[in-house]
Amino acid sequence: MNNDKDLTQRGIENEAKGKAREAKGVVRDNVGDITGNESQELKGKAERVAGKVQQKVGEAQRKIDDKI
Image (cartoon, rainbow, N blue to C red; front, side, top):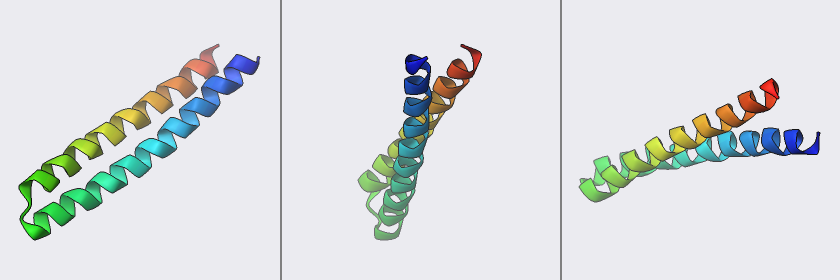
């Protein structure tokens, strides 16, 4: 089914975007830590969590597609 491929593709995209977002958060967190900028550090931590969540959403989308 075309919808199944769409769900799988969206899952793959969400996983990739989530990994990139998590990496961006790690960098921001580290820069904030090095510079002593607590605000940037906290934003980095939040971005890391958001990236992990996005990855899990992508994994779920792919698993749902496998079950359909």
